[in-house]
Amino acid sequence: MFIKEFCNNTPMRYWIGALLIFLVACTSLPQPTAPEQPPAQAVSEEANPPQAPPVATPQQTTTQTEDITAQSPSESTGTYIVGIKDEAVDIKDIKRISLTISTIHLVTIDNSIIDVPITNQDFDLIQLRSNGQTALAANTQVPSGDYTELRIFLQSVGISQGGSDKQAAMPRKVLNLKGDFSIYPGRNHAAIIDFKADQSIFVTQQGRTIFAPVVSYEEHKEAGVAVENNQVLLGATDLRFRKTLGMSANGDMELNYRIDPDAPLSWENNQLLIKDIDVGTRLNTQYTAQVSAQRLNNSVGHSASYEQCLEGCQASCMGTMCKKCEESCY
Image 1 (spheres, rainbow, N blue to C red):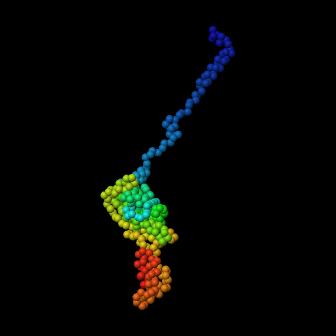
Image 2 (image 1 turned 120 degrees about the horizontal axis):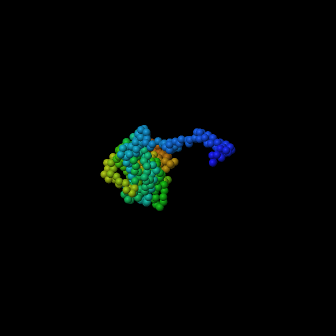
Image 3 (image 1 turned 135 degrees about the vertical axis):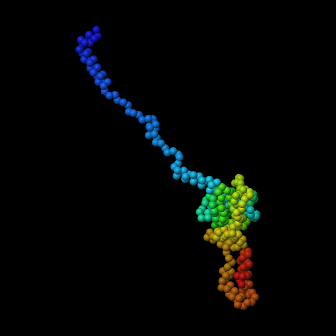
């Protein structure tokens, strides 16, 4: 019945036919495909490029090994300890000698400078003497090798005496402690500096306090050393040398030297001067020359002029310098 009506209904046949043609045309067209997606791993690598692995190249590996070796105390460095003490006799009226170290250097045999890091820099020599202690100044690793000098740079020296505090002047603020010694890999070494404060303090004619240190300098190898509470404790050691060095007026540390305590000292233009008794200047250069000539020409006993010269010299001299008056007036 439906088919008979469909065949007799021309408009319906037209629309049904058009629909069939449209469906056939659509099914014959190529179907669009989704773009091919790269694998998830490829996207990750593109967004985050791979980093170089932490493994160094052979050349870098060699350099790193050398750096580690250079820092290893058992391979190319030794332990170096610096201790400060004062075993001087009691100094009348001086209550404190405060010493501040700014820098410590070692000098190699080829004049290279090795900086020694400071552990402690402030020391009271009077307290160290009272306690019988050796205070720690440095405890570090230094390159093994041969050395010729230990340099200790002083920042300041303060002295408390008679109820007043004063800063002492110094001919030079560095102690050049010369002595040949070696640092051995993986071994302990210790330098002990004993300040002899009773031989190191002077007063100039102007009343200026001078600190020209006299020290006992020791170098120890294979030190049976312990550091406790910033104190250096020495056990059995191989003492390489012990020497006494004193600072001169020009600042040099000289072997077995100290400034004459009776010498007339003067502090001028930031320099320490040791004054000689110049009788010719004090009295009269020409007059003194005439006295000496008369003494030599006449070959007689002391003249009145000689006695006058001697009396004037002895009235103006100081300490042992008075012994030179007779020779000066002769």
